Image (cartoon, rainbow over all chains, first blue to last red; front, side, top):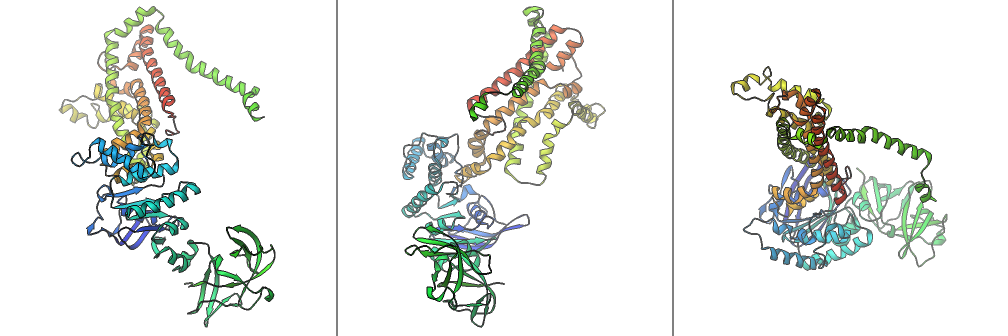
Length: 351
Length: 279
């Protein structure tokens, strides 16, 4: 188990991490998700021992590793830009971690070579051991980097934006493959990403970070369906956000009272967040202006898989809302008026 | 269409290229040829005699000695400085970079005078040196010191941009795989910078052997003792011994040509070109 206790880190005046607490169970696959500057990479580097926290402790099982250097922590680290050693063959890259061991614990040369071959087989690059990094594609290089990290049998695998430098198709393939590999090996793994889709697809648990704090921690579905803050609902998945006022259990947008499937508590200004697919068309005969529904003027429509993605604005507003309508129906005409009913939404009071 | 315009040169382009070639011919090629022509004016025998004359031999030996000390010192310094500058953040970093450039911006004569001021008989450390019977100025140690000072930007200047561009990922990868600091340096950092380093060493060596100004101030021009090749050339020239002067000068010119050949070989063989950092 990995335990982070109250980790803080500042770079000059900039507080990169503010009191992070996090427990990671053995065998878990955890995503650190956040925009750039959220502190996710700093946190990963501190877990690895490539950077050190100003405050707080890190525990690997019963051992306090806070002051241990990266070489002593027995972690595997995979870099966004692979960081393969350009002048070494692929097999030498993979065997590097074993070949730099002290003489006493260093395996014989042919053992190292055999182990490298074995790992290259595991990452499906069995025949490429004699090549050099420059002769490989990006996806292949990242798999070599992974094999190299696994060669030292780490107790923890850390990946810093591992698919960030790859094109979309390769990224998707590699993602699925990494998920399989994780299930096969059961190695505790933490990866950093700014891509919410990647986090939701791969991770057992997602840690959403912003401005050096954990905004939410939970299973992917939980994060998506019940975001804990307006930041999370905006960052994870597509989202619409309306400034509303809560009063006497009613939610008002401008001078319109909205009918919502949620109970509005408290009072004062708030943000109403809902996802594009969380709306339905109001009855057409109501002229798009039924009580409690939102009027929307269609500005543009395009296909998004099985849905129409409709972009529109409300009367007297410049804010663009995105909604999804099933593509079984014909696409709404540009310029037409729709009446929308919000079926699922969250309210976040504005401080 | 576009390939045609690329292939066919306009009158202006031809004029510019011609101007460049004429300039190179007048200021680089002709002087170089002149050195060898003058050196061989009285035949190969006179040329050979000028080179095996004891004072010349001693100047050549001293030049080699100075280079043999100052180049390795600057390799160590250059790698250490660029490592620190490229891979770490610390206070006073930009000041250090400015300091490294100092020998480029200071006149070599001033550099020489600095050492006279420090180590000369009337200098700050003069009395102490005299008491301990150590002679720096007008002796070999002074020449070595001045040469180290003049040449120390070459390796560092070559490596800093290269190492900055390469970043820390490779080193961190090695460390995370359990390598020690030295193993990381030896197996990862050094191979990554080898061509840049070689290039810097060539330049450093060429300058170490060819430096005149600073060395001239601290040397004292004692024949057979503290004359390096460039100083020897000057003395011979002032004595109207042109053949001998140009014979020794031709050795220096030959060294320069050799450096260029090596540099081109590195660039051609490994695709390393100055400024493009090894890709």
